[in-house]
Length: 221
Ligand code: SF4
Image (cartoon, rainbow, N blue to C red; front, side):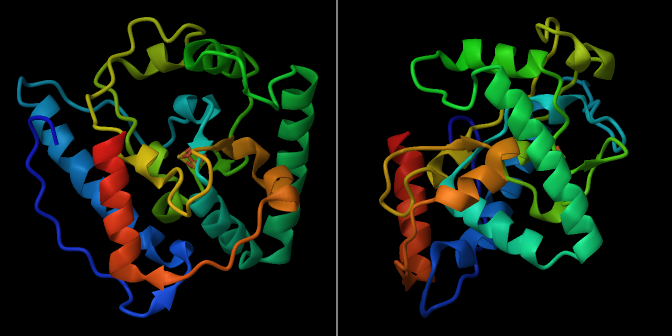
């Protein structure tokens, strides 16, 4: 991938499974790409400034694919009732703010325009607890790809001026369209709203077939 050479073993179910079952394998693959990019990007002595307890970037728009959305909805269902309730309140609050700002529908806006308008709303990700990710091992692929070497305080600035992200290939985008749907995504903060109207599918393929599709999507993006 670009300057990076990634050698990474992938273990997936051999039987026919829903796409959500291969998400852990895709997370491992993205982790491997990020680790290689991090090693590459810090060769000149720069170090990653992202730290536990800094959740500035968790107020950005986090685009999530359908497959990841389904996996996250299943994860939320397994959480204790109290935590689910708290999450439900946070998602409802985020949904209201996004709706009032007219950002629930992202059609017709450039990515940059949408990202800045969203960030200006200052909505903390509903999964953010005490400025740390409460679902860190299960966080979306795109969250794994965001690392910076610039001072952490710059990430909280309204225009992100001076922020220096590590150049990480955006492998997460290959999860879009994995189930043959249109190449769509939604903001993570609208997960619950999306969950109520999401297109249903019982499509099953073998684990290796899902991974091959993902790899083909990487090449096509
Ligand atoms: S899922 Fe976790 S890492 Fe991603 S934006 Fe939310 S709190 Fe941050």
